[in-house]
Image (tube, rainbow over all chains, first blue to last red; front, side, top):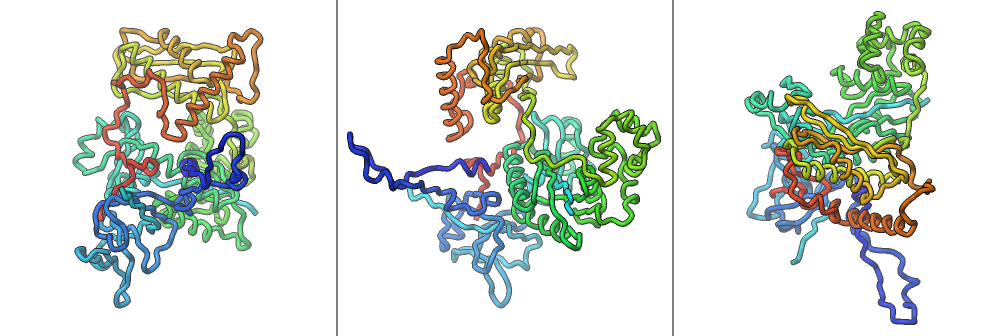
Length: 135
Length: 423
């Protein structure tokens, strides 16, 4: 777990101390915001991947985003999942139409994928966060 | 009632690679040792092709190409990360755990009322597969020897689906007969030779052997194995490993070393690593050895070591580096091509029991200063990345560095190398 404990601390409160007087806020600084704690619930089954492409833009996942994937979660209808299809990873939304599950793209220019047409298909994990750099 | 299970990852290194790279799934895959020397791991698909372990890569390269086998250099940071995750998941689903190797652990579990541990084992197997994408084998016995044995049976019996519980088997002797003595945990080469000379060929025969004859030849160690085969528990689960007796860092070079400068550089890098390892475990050394040798295949074989005892134990890289660089001159020889070198730290003691020698040369002030400096370097390296701060000698270009031509280069621990997914 070592790597996960290598936390990045951002002070919740910080006051510069003017000479002579202690900051009245000093007694209230309690903790730091820990992004690892916020983003990762199950550290032993959480993986990071980098996304290239725009087939999921309508879901908020954009080109170059960093996605956080928890493999311990069981995918539900509507989950955004990492699927392995014929030896390739892809990201899609798990959806249902006419009682049949399929993988939905979140961009009109891309096709949806049906489970029927693929010989080797497996859900690898559930995407829980997408981290987007605003530049 | 409690039982012990030995849990290990199947084709662990290959499975780690396949779990994060879907293109490698269902493909024959082999992993090479450091320096791309020999085959050290195979995916089940490569096993099916009858590719054997331990074969030097250059001997089998052609065949692998023809068969379309994927070949990778070992990626230990990946295997180490998956191993850590595996052990932590096991820890949260078992009562006690002893990590036995990178992909093996003994765990202790209490039996349910109906004595049936198969549901627990099936659930754990599913959980590990879902969380990490690797398949595990679970062997259950009354003790460690039997758990190991059960694990072997789980792998060899196809219908077992990766789980075998020796404790609920009716006719145990049928199964013990299938295990050859050399495959029993704790039976080494010499022992199995002696046992065979006495007509003892399998686990059942060892179990039934005259205990006095066994004890006379093999002592308590042999007796313990026999007792465990009989179902008694002699070897406890060791949750905390006793501290290491020595720390060694050694590697073979990608290219043979002929220059003293290069040998010094290699030994310096290994010393920095060894010192770090000591500090992580709160250990100090008072005996430093360096060694180097030519290749075993070389025409003129040469090997030499040099040694220094310290008056005061230390884990300070600066002090250790000075000594190692001095010693490296003693083992260097301009006429030989060195293929491997290493450093060995012995007489390890806990840093907290710090002993000041009477005739020490460093003042307490200097000692404290040195310690603070090293601690600062360690914390900076922990925060950023190993090697963020290092010693100048490591910075010259490494001409002898290990070959890792076929590294998959994917990482689960380095954000710059995480898998890329095209969507």
